[in-house]
Image 1: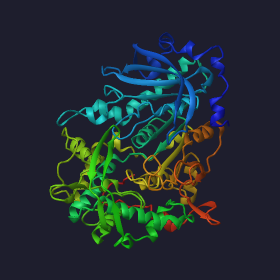
Image 2 (image 1 turned 90 degrees about the vertical axis):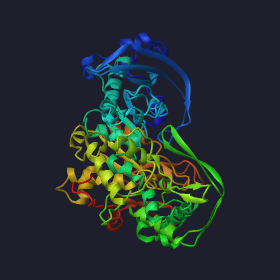
Image 3 (image 1 turned 45 degrees about the horizontal axis):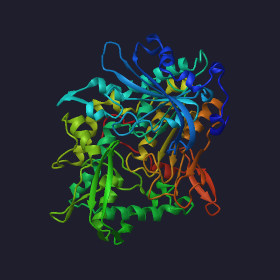
Image 4 (image 1 turned 135 degrees about the vertical axis):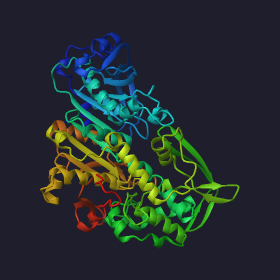
Length: 584
């Protein structure tokens, strides 16, 4: 199998031997002539008058966490709109198609984040550089910049179901079927095989699972990062630390929780056998670190103005005064309660929280300059979900947490689960059709993710194993699942990115390339390549272990083994006994 550089310099496809240049094919007339028939795209109707095509030469990209930098590439930027049978709301697509001599008979769908169904065009170079036509959808929300929450309600109490199901899974299915069919016509590929792929993280990860769970033959492979699935629990979970603080009546200064996180990293760094400022084994951290050991530690932070990203294109600024003090017993107790995860008032588990070493972003308090005290800062990530999607009010947040208890959070989780189970929960565990179709999955999740619990991905992976291979032992079931669906936890990584508090941690920037090699070249990814992208170890190449094996370094941190031990594994096993139904 060729490397990424080989792909970029790949041979011209047979189907395009007659194509002279990008200029020959990147015209509106050729794009219109390439449109698939309605029968080829499940009755969808493309508006031929909406077609635009423009050639872009010598483009470059500095790369992202999901693809490396590329210095020069050419592509054709095509936009179009279509409608569904019997409906008149147009949906917009933007597709970047590589120059004919670079095309490798590949299609790549890309996803969004937060309530955005796309990441703009920022993910598209990661397809073009590997010889894939790549696309995004606007979901029918009116523009590529319009997010789902802006169109979810028709009016207070009235759900826009067309938008809901578009966001849930339909729009991405349509992006794939139109994108594959259009690119086939664009490149005159005839009956040749088009390899179809997906790459997305966070909401984009959930969007990936939404297709894998419903459409067995849509893709040959998917890179799925830190998926924001289990929507009923995930969105409310952002409010959990706020309710902890509100219940305790203690609102820790951000610097206090930052100190606890930094001391956790320092204490747990060496547990994986290597001292590098990275917690590679948060399970061992759970077993051996006591947050109370941080009590009395001095913290000091200068006055600052920070910007918190609430959604893809929405942020909020917080100004905080200088902070000096020591970690209190109340601060340690609040951190411990958060790390334990949501339990009902009678002690039953409703959900999980982040791994030790993750930052306490959801717990950030705000300073009241009138009272000179810290107070709760209700995160809109959870507050808007409750206000808009559960209470069906046109509101961006909750105004108060008065009378909100741990039981209230559990009830909100169950309501969201029930109301959106068929569209946003996205945790259907029987992936037999996708497996039978030959599909491959590389699922990654930062082990220090402060936005989506790492254990969320582990729990789903284990649910799939238990549902699909109930007759096999744990070892044999894990082996069978890992033959086509592999989960890699990324030491020290945050949410879909490296962590600023653990910069020496690696990130698997070339995962899509690895997936291509697995699907098209049968190169099995026993371990996953990763690169340290910042910090003192920048440029260092590492490898990630496939779940359920965990990294353990020996020879003074120079050789990494992938190991399994039952005690560590059990820290990832949860019984959600707050619910009568199984939570996959």
